[in-house]
Length: 196
Image (cartoon, rainbow, N blue to C red; front, side, top):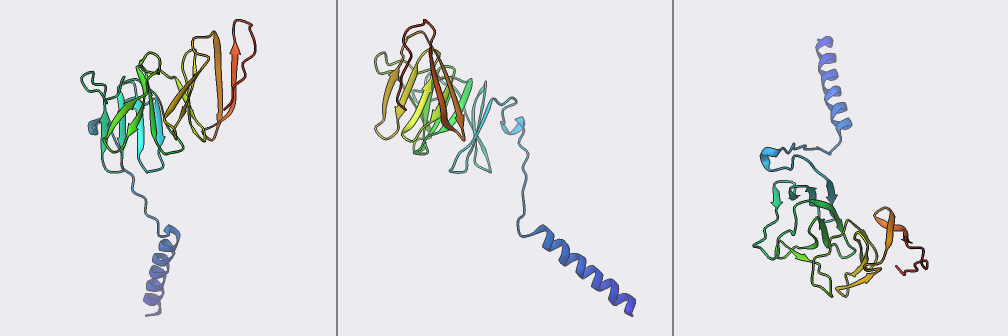
């Protein structure tokens, strides 16, 4: 009888010990594959503050909400679609706007309409093709091949610096914030001074 009680107590103790180790948190893992529409090759991943995961590839953009995957593609007939399918970067500004940089233009995600608002050059009305973006307190720095733009999220204004000049631009970030910005005049003219 004592042997049976000892075995029962050992079983109860093991159950209680295992429950205390595992804690109250249960983790659920879901594997996504190309069969659910997940991109086969991913260039960039961004986890936004509202909980969505964004995935950029050379074939478009995908947004995962924890349950389903939504894919966005280039559509030349749709004014507020992605301007290109090759996604360079996904980032978020201080107002929690999601920005997508593509091979054919830069857009801001419009949550209310589930569409994209293109960012155009003020003088030519052409898409800004930015290769990198860095959030600032006021908005976003957009870096193109030979220009630097400051987008103010609060005033919805775009200001260009070094447009068309012979410059090389280097931006270093720490924790997704600008740490060092170097503008190098490759013609040997004056040194560049900018305010961020």
